[in-house]
Length: 232
Image (cartoon, rainbow, N blue to C red; front, side, top):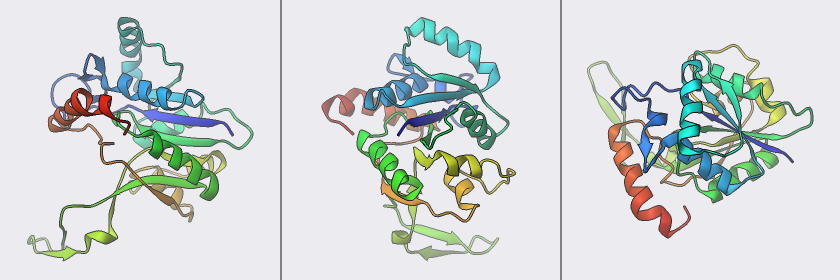
């Protein structure tokens, strides 16, 4: 079965600071988004990658490709007003009329493991939809009043969600025919709005989303000290 992976990289990176969007911040000697794409291609070169970028970043991207001799084969789509609309545009690049599997991945998650990617695609084929999740290690509290009163919640009932989130093509197409609502925080929430269930697989803790300057510090440490030593 053919596999696609839509990589969304449309964030403005306001929490990262500076004038450079977070997907174009350097990680080692390359922009984060290139590190992500090269890793995904190295894990599975048969998977068709679809990169979604804001219109105003496309020429910048092409110049970066020339500068860094970037050669990973991919399809390029223009981003939309929200992540939902960006995924819609990426999904439009998937022209299979037969059933396929389609994943959606954050362009600023360069450390997904091959095991997680394989597990997500396998479970999506079985269940129709699969997402990676990790356990919550910190104590959690729920805000119960506007005065700031909180109550403890059992952390073993909660999980942190990562990407890639993988679906059967027919299901994801049907989900993204819905009208956008603010409660759509990720692709799983879009699919669940149809009344469908989503299977979970164990994620890898290194698969962090680079959002703040501190995240970038962690990522640089992973690149320099950990990744060359073992497969994550």
